[in-house]
Image 1 (cartoon, one colour):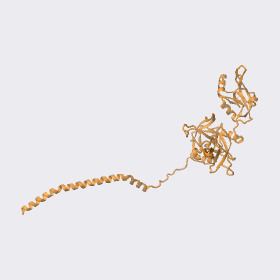
Image 2 (cartoon, rainbow, N blue to C red; image 1 turned 60 degrees about the vertical axis):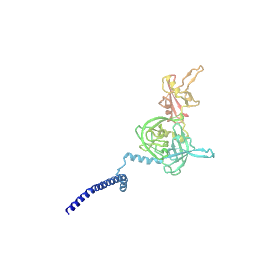
Image 3 (tube, rainbow, N blue to C red; image 1 turned 180 degrees about the horizontal axis):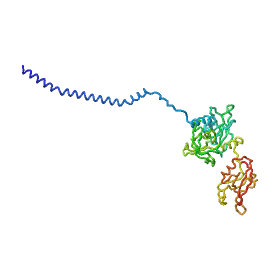
Image 4 (tube, rainbow, N blue to C red; image 1 turned 90 degrees about the vertical axis):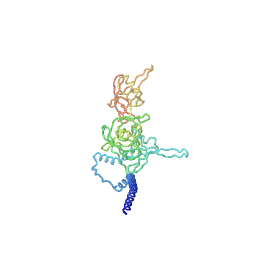
Length: 395
């Protein structure tokens, strides 16, 4: 019996030893599955985290609280006030031209270009650049209040790149723009430009006067003198729009930009208002600009050679027009003798008290006078300075 008990213990011990590895194997398998599940859950969490984060943010999204701004600065208030006061005087100009359809031979009106302008007076006159309406068959003027009118060309001056249009508005006349002066402008002065760049109507840009008394070529041998240079952004479509000072007065007409690419590059030019205020009334009265003239023919290149030989500064008279004020005053041009010798003509050195060095000075001196005015002309003949009075005629 005792032997039987011992045998049972031994068998039990053997069975226990035989079953131990299987339990350890089962435990290892459980541990591996657990880690796999943990890793899978972590990877899934990493993949879903951005979306869960977005859901959480979206659930919490709501308008931000507005931060109190305070009052606008004095400069901002001034700029806003000027724009709101002046913009009703600014107009948007669209031009049309006629084209013939090649196949049907029908005459069509197609858009040609856009530009800007401003109301000049209570008679429906609108001022813009000449190049805005040059070559156009028709022009339309768009007012600030949305009304559109067909415009008639009253007159233009190629030399100043100015044109005057007229619209029949009726009783609701737009407000004419306030006029300033360009005689006392200073570099660094604040300016505002209002116009329609790229057809985007009533656009405001600001800047300063960056230079004065600039001259640029207007093409076809034309030169525009005494322009205002500004860094206020001026782009195609701004042409003809007003350049305004900080008092809300017109001081120039935006006319051109300097840019290799054709877009704004920081340099724009405007015709000074003193020129505008002088030329526009003549265009309204006569339909064209009639420049006061002495009645002489000049050439800068030839004049420079003659005055250099004589050792003086001035404008050499090449020829005197028959019946002109210069002829009646006794001025002489270049003479060629029978033996081929050339006798220099008179050299004008001053007009109305202003010293003359070249043709630009001469034109400026005459510009502020009316036809029929009598002006004093100082000239040098045979080494002696003489003065006469000349009655100005038109050229």
